[in-house]
Length: 103
Image (spheres, rainbow, N blue to C red):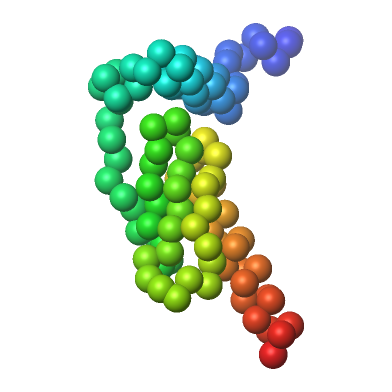
């Protein structure tokens, strides 16, 4: 019995769907039709003192909510919200480790 006999792998299926969405967004962006495509716009999300803004190309713009900024704004590649949150957590942990070393 082959693994392919058991049916599609859920992880592979999700990856294929995400890849198709990225390709569609890329093609629409190249044609200048992304805003006209009717793709839903997400509201800004707040997470641990940051504002997460979904971009038209499916990437994320991450900005601190307040000044002074201990972490500068950055862009995250096209990924899930959980991946962006993990990236924010990693940057905050890195900042905490640097503050401990400098003290």
